[in-house]
Length: 89
Image 1 (cartoon, one colour):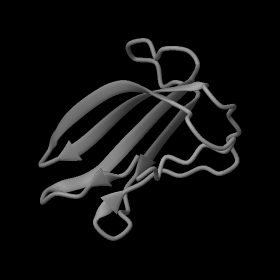
Image 2 (cartoon, one colour; image 1 turned 135 degrees about the vertical axis):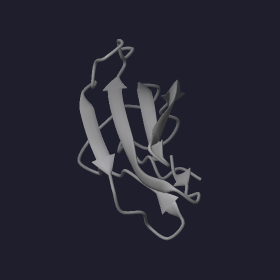
Image 3 (cartoon, helix red, strand yellow; image 1 turned 90 degrees about the vertical axis):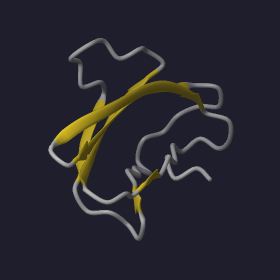
């Protein structure tokens, strides 16, 4: 799940929970702040997290831009493979 870069973005935080919703103010199973983009994208990738087909990745993203924080929450099903790859195209 790459996040496109935009002027003023200084970092992106990824909060993940597997098969369980993320409650308010809960960092989830994985909480990672990325402060260095790859090319023109902000990416969190962890090949050591193993998931099964049809597991669900619950996420909260926080984009830090121009001193403000913008958030987005959602759920993504694991549709292929058994290794979580949030670099999905």
